[in-house]
Image 1 (cartoon, rainbow, N blue to C red):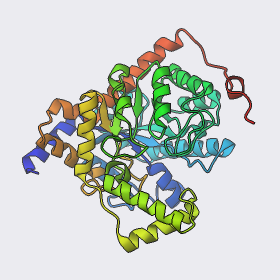
Image 2: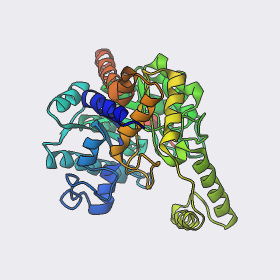
Image 3: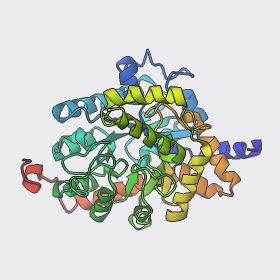
Length: 397
């Protein structure tokens, strides 16, 4: 791409920085160093992660939703405890680098951080198992600064179906709808990444505030259940929400998706259950190393961004890279320094500065502010929900 395009993009990002919807650095820090930010010193460039402060600066990132993810192998009290440890890790990270990072929960705090030359650090919990079917736990996560909850991760929760599990409820249960309403009341964004298409539809039928897809792409471009069908995308303008396109290769490249499906079929033929990670992952990695796996590219991501814009318009899309949540990223987007290259590719395809600024972060900030405004209106008319899952959904058999 011409050098003058990148110069234009860097100037644009200086005024309209990236607000990225999803980064899994906190879990990487847990796995690598037990949250020891001295050993994983992100002030130093070239860490063995996709993310460090110099590369965030190079990428024009002004605000990051850090995922306080915990795996669904943790359930009940263990999931809640691990989520709190993740929240603590983000807060510790911000305290460790006070000149570079600032905790934020509102649009005003994001903009204050930018004015001070710091990267706003927001948090999102990835998976409803983190609240252990408790609205009180949900509220306490909100009080600690968690600004979105992804309703499921890869597995169903008792009150919502996941995109990558066998459907049980056909969407949300009665308690699941109450979770959405309570999130609206406290100003926590309803994140519909990872959930089944029916859960997406039920949540959109229920919500009183804009939703987000923190890291999802377009199913019409790559047929993966983690992506968003067009009929759901078409509802975003009416809802006011935003789809933050992700960079995960198996979600953006049909060739990668097809290769992965073939690997799953080969595993079944070899007597290995693809859902058994302990058995499947070594099989998958050996097959990848032996046969080679297709690569995704920046152009694949461009196709998703342009398709989403075609369906929803420029006011309802954003970016959610999922850095440090996967091992390999598309060529040209290998780490968090890559956002200017993506925006430059779109600029070369005729995108205006206004639309690029909206994609980079403007739309995400609008949704954050609108969720705050809706919460203020809702909380003026109703108090905290005291509903319990056993009251609304019955006691599980």
